[in-house]
Length: 443
Image (cartoon, rainbow, N blue to C red; front, side, top):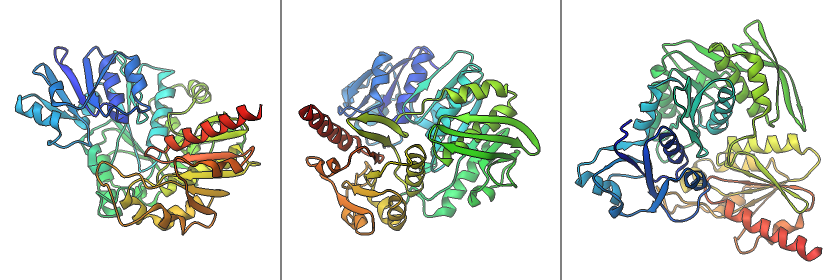
């Protein structure tokens, strides 16, 4: 890294960008950035680190800067355009991540779903036993001098992760999640195979994923899961309202009994991947067991709070597979409560492509509410509405308005799960305010 320049992040509040900015700041680099003025959950960490955040403006750019451009922005963005005019070095986000990958033993986490939860868990566990730098997709990042490991999230969107050549890669699953870019599932598989072939030491992939089973790689592949043909297996699984316990085997070798304070089958699988990587790197498994017990989760992944008599869960789930996993986790933790889902569809293209699957997964809740579709920077309208999705849902499907969250007041001593990758949290906060005001009036 160049210690004389200021790394200026265009789109610094993005989850990956904010994490990367924090890492460079930890390494002693000068860091600043720009973004929208609206508050986002990632900016608090940047503020606490003393990193300046400016509104987008070409006047932010000067000759002493190196630009780190977020993946969402093209060369026509005003600051990037100005940087080009000044002849400044403009790096894309994946290029800077690759610079960090080359410095240490690197472990990338890829997959249509589960990247952030798995990379967050791996970062937590390894940090507890060895110096570890990490870049997690919930906006958290840390740079450690002379780190042994670097854990990072590898995003498949627009094939961004093909810039990476890690030592190890965990692949949680392959799914068709970006219909605005990928032409189909074969196109997605091709992208993952590119990353697999660029991995230097070993792959850890979920064995029950038929697409991952087909991948070709030039390094050893370890399949993890719960089936007899998996290399790393969880057996004797017990799921309770406190979490899950299970035995782990590597082929016929018993690695031990593990306990996790997390819910849902997906978290057992995520833990298996972490255990497998750490075992291969000869990390003491007794230390791994201790660290697993203290994991508190990552931001916007099954984050819980209690308001009045209700349990409120906030989750980033925006794909049918993720919705299924989140509702499964809620059922495990709260088997005797009614589960109410409030879902914000994310992008028109995804809603159209996966309409029936969304309806099927949401119907796993006891009651379903929707919000209007959240458009992305890439698309602002489409030939589908939340009402169209609601008509396919049998457990409800009414569309909530931000200024009228009162239908949710019909529920008491139950669980409301807010899910989405857009601004679903503003609906959650509106509901929480209603609950709080009602509770104060009743007292």
